[in-house]
Image (tube, rainbow, N blue to C red; front, side, top):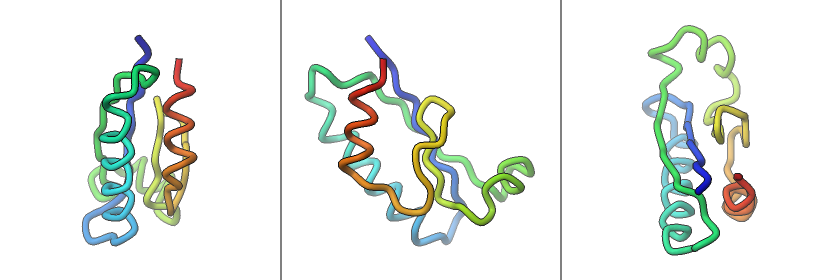
Length: 89
């Protein structure tokens, strides 16, 4: 079975990051019963705790990575995220 590792890069106090977290959680919850969905893991990383992430993404948070590759910056589209997760192999 395929695995999708989601990484949300943001920082505390970022309202767009809070929105992205909620949206990702909602999409993942809806996919939980889908037999075509991959196993999904999720982690959050803060640009305040990692100098490299800070340098890379300071102006772009929130950033959502799927298996280490950038999926989206700023606002996450739930339809696009669902489709991308179902394409993970």
